[in-house]
Amino acid sequence: MRRLTPVLLISLLTACNSPSQNRYDSQDVGHNAVILFGTVLSERPVDITGKNTGTGAMGGAAAGAIGGSAIGQGRGSLLGLVGGAIIGGIAGHIAEQELENRQGIEYIVKFPSNGTTQSIVQNIAKTDIPIAAGECVMVQMNGTYQRVLPSTDASECHAAAKHRKRKHEDDEG
Image (cartoon, rainbow, N blue to C red):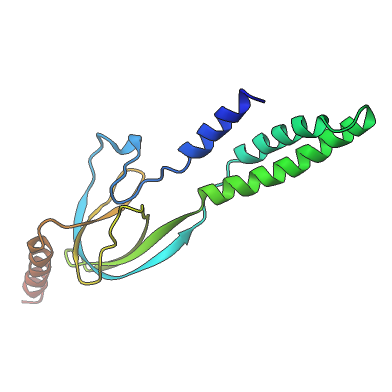
Protein backbone atom coordinates (compact mmCIF):
# COMPACT_ATOMS: atom_id res chain seq x y z
CA MET A 1 0.00 0.00 0.00
CA ARG A 2 2.85 2.38 0.79
CA ARG A 3 4.22 1.95 -2.73
CA LEU A 4 0.79 2.24 -4.35
CA THR A 5 -0.16 5.55 -2.71
CA PRO A 6 2.57 7.71 -4.33
CA VAL A 7 1.81 6.21 -7.75
CA LEU A 8 -1.90 7.03 -7.37
CA LEU A 9 -1.17 10.56 -6.20
CA ILE A 10 1.22 11.24 -9.08
CA SER A 11 -1.22 9.88 -11.66
CA LEU A 12 -4.09 11.94 -10.25
CA LEU A 13 -2.02 15.13 -10.05
CA THR A 14 -0.64 14.82 -13.58
CA ALA A 15 -4.17 14.41 -14.93
CA CYS A 16 -4.89 18.02 -13.92
CA ASN A 17 -2.65 19.58 -16.58
CA SER A 18 -5.01 20.31 -19.47
CA PRO A 19 -4.06 22.46 -22.46
CA SER A 20 -5.26 26.05 -22.25
CA GLN A 21 -4.51 29.48 -23.66
CA ASN A 22 -0.92 29.36 -22.41
CA ARG A 23 -0.35 25.61 -21.87
CA TYR A 24 0.41 23.20 -24.72
CA ASP A 25 0.37 19.38 -24.77
CA SER A 26 3.71 17.82 -25.63
CA GLN A 27 2.31 16.35 -28.88
CA ASP A 28 1.51 19.90 -30.09
CA VAL A 29 5.12 21.05 -29.81
CA GLY A 30 6.90 21.23 -33.16
CA HIS A 31 3.70 20.93 -35.22
CA ASN A 32 2.51 23.77 -37.39
CA ALA A 33 -0.94 25.25 -36.98
CA VAL A 34 -3.11 27.21 -39.40
CA ILE A 35 -3.86 30.64 -37.97
CA LEU A 36 -7.14 32.40 -38.73
CA PHE A 37 -7.83 35.90 -37.50
CA GLY A 38 -11.27 36.78 -36.24
CA THR A 39 -13.31 38.84 -33.83
CA VAL A 40 -14.84 37.52 -30.62
CA LEU A 41 -18.60 38.03 -30.74
CA SER A 42 -19.17 36.65 -27.24
CA GLU A 43 -17.54 34.64 -24.48
CA ARG A 44 -18.96 32.74 -21.54
CA PRO A 45 -17.63 30.42 -18.84
CA VAL A 46 -18.53 26.73 -19.19
CA ASP A 47 -18.03 23.57 -17.16
CA ILE A 48 -16.07 20.80 -18.89
CA THR A 49 -16.74 17.23 -17.81
CA GLY A 50 -13.48 15.31 -17.83
CA LYS A 51 -12.93 11.77 -18.98
CA ASN A 52 -12.93 9.22 -16.16
CA THR A 53 -10.28 6.57 -16.93
CA GLY A 54 -11.14 4.18 -14.10
CA THR A 55 -7.73 4.66 -12.45
CA GLY A 56 -9.31 6.30 -9.41
CA ALA A 57 -11.84 3.49 -9.00
CA MET A 58 -9.18 0.80 -9.30
CA GLY A 59 -6.86 2.57 -6.87
CA GLY A 60 -9.69 3.23 -4.45
CA ALA A 61 -10.85 -0.39 -4.64
CA ALA A 62 -7.32 -1.66 -3.96
CA ALA A 63 -6.82 0.71 -1.04
CA GLY A 64 -10.28 -0.10 0.33
CA ALA A 65 -9.67 -3.84 0.03
CA ILE A 66 -6.36 -3.61 1.87
CA GLY A 67 -7.84 -1.41 4.58
CA GLY A 68 -11.02 -3.47 4.82
CA SER A 69 -9.15 -6.77 5.14
CA ALA A 70 -7.62 -5.53 8.38
CA ILE A 71 -11.10 -5.46 9.93
CA GLY A 72 -12.04 -8.58 11.86
CA GLN A 73 -10.71 -12.10 11.51
CA GLY A 74 -11.59 -15.01 9.27
CA ARG A 75 -14.93 -14.43 7.55
CA GLY A 76 -15.14 -10.88 8.95
CA SER A 77 -11.85 -10.09 7.28
CA LEU A 78 -13.23 -11.31 3.93
CA LEU A 79 -16.38 -9.20 4.34
CA GLY A 80 -14.24 -6.21 5.28
CA LEU A 81 -12.10 -6.76 2.17
CA VAL A 82 -15.15 -6.89 -0.14
CA GLY A 83 -16.90 -3.97 1.56
CA GLY A 84 -13.71 -1.90 1.57
CA ALA A 85 -13.13 -2.62 -2.12
CA ILE A 86 -16.67 -1.52 -3.04
CA ILE A 87 -16.62 1.63 -0.92
CA GLY A 88 -13.05 2.48 -1.99
CA GLY A 89 -13.89 1.92 -5.66
CA ILE A 90 -16.86 4.26 -5.49
CA ALA A 91 -14.88 6.90 -3.60
CA GLY A 92 -11.97 6.60 -6.04
CA HIS A 93 -14.29 6.98 -9.04
CA ILE A 94 -15.89 10.11 -7.58
CA ALA A 95 -12.50 11.60 -6.63
CA GLU A 96 -11.06 11.03 -10.12
CA GLN A 97 -14.12 12.54 -11.80
CA GLU A 98 -13.90 15.65 -9.63
CA LEU A 99 -10.21 16.02 -10.47
CA GLU A 100 -10.91 15.65 -14.20
CA ASN A 101 -13.80 18.16 -14.30
CA ARG A 102 -12.60 21.69 -15.03
CA GLN A 103 -13.56 25.18 -16.03
CA GLY A 104 -13.52 26.31 -19.64
CA ILE A 105 -14.59 29.17 -21.79
CA GLU A 106 -16.67 29.22 -24.96
CA TYR A 107 -15.83 31.82 -27.58
CA ILE A 108 -18.07 32.65 -30.53
CA VAL A 109 -15.64 33.91 -33.18
CA LYS A 110 -16.47 35.54 -36.53
CA PHE A 111 -13.86 34.97 -39.24
CA PRO A 112 -14.07 37.76 -41.85
CA SER A 113 -11.67 35.97 -44.23
CA ASN A 114 -14.18 33.20 -44.96
CA GLY A 115 -17.39 34.62 -43.50
CA THR A 116 -17.90 31.82 -40.98
CA THR A 117 -18.76 31.99 -37.31
CA GLN A 118 -17.55 29.24 -34.99
CA SER A 119 -18.02 28.21 -31.39
CA ILE A 120 -14.72 27.17 -29.80
CA VAL A 121 -14.58 25.79 -26.27
CA GLN A 122 -11.21 25.68 -24.59
CA ASN A 123 -9.84 25.03 -21.13
CA ILE A 124 -9.08 28.09 -19.08
CA ALA A 125 -6.31 28.12 -16.53
CA LYS A 126 -6.23 30.40 -13.51
CA THR A 127 -3.53 32.47 -15.23
CA ASP A 128 -5.49 32.89 -18.51
CA ILE A 129 -7.28 36.16 -19.09
CA PRO A 130 -10.61 35.77 -20.95
CA ILE A 131 -10.79 37.61 -24.25
CA ALA A 132 -13.65 40.12 -24.36
CA ALA A 133 -16.27 40.50 -27.09
CA GLY A 134 -15.06 42.78 -29.87
CA GLU A 135 -11.40 41.79 -29.50
CA CYS A 136 -9.33 40.63 -32.47
CA VAL A 137 -8.02 37.09 -31.95
CA MET A 138 -5.92 34.53 -33.72
CA VAL A 139 -7.18 30.97 -33.65
CA GLN A 140 -4.80 28.04 -34.02
CA MET A 141 -6.52 25.35 -36.09
CA ASN A 142 -4.38 22.22 -35.95
CA GLY A 143 -3.01 19.57 -33.67
CA THR A 144 -5.10 18.14 -30.92
CA TYR A 145 -6.48 21.40 -29.60
CA GLN A 146 -7.99 24.54 -31.15
CA ARG A 147 -6.81 27.57 -29.26
CA VAL A 148 -8.15 31.15 -29.19
CA LEU A 149 -5.39 33.63 -28.44
CA PRO A 150 -5.30 37.41 -28.26
CA SER A 151 -4.02 38.87 -31.52
CA THR A 152 -0.85 40.88 -31.28
CA ASP A 153 -1.87 42.78 -34.43
CA ALA A 154 -5.50 43.96 -34.68
CA SER A 155 -4.84 45.10 -38.25
CA GLU A 156 -4.96 41.40 -39.26
CA CYS A 157 -8.70 41.30 -38.44
CA HIS A 158 -9.35 44.50 -40.37
CA ALA A 159 -7.24 43.36 -43.34
CA ALA A 160 -9.11 40.05 -43.54
CA ALA A 161 -12.46 41.86 -43.46
CA LYS A 162 -11.37 44.31 -46.20
CA HIS A 163 -10.03 41.46 -48.37
CA ARG A 164 -13.33 39.55 -48.09
CA LYS A 165 -15.36 42.71 -48.88
CA ARG A 166 -13.19 43.49 -51.91
CA LYS A 167 -13.44 39.87 -53.15
CA HIS A 168 -17.25 39.98 -52.74
CA GLU A 169 -17.42 43.24 -54.73
CA ASP A 170 -15.21 41.73 -57.47
CA ASP A 171 -17.44 38.66 -57.68
CA GLU A 172 -20.55 40.84 -58.10
CA GLY A 173 -19.02 43.27 -60.60
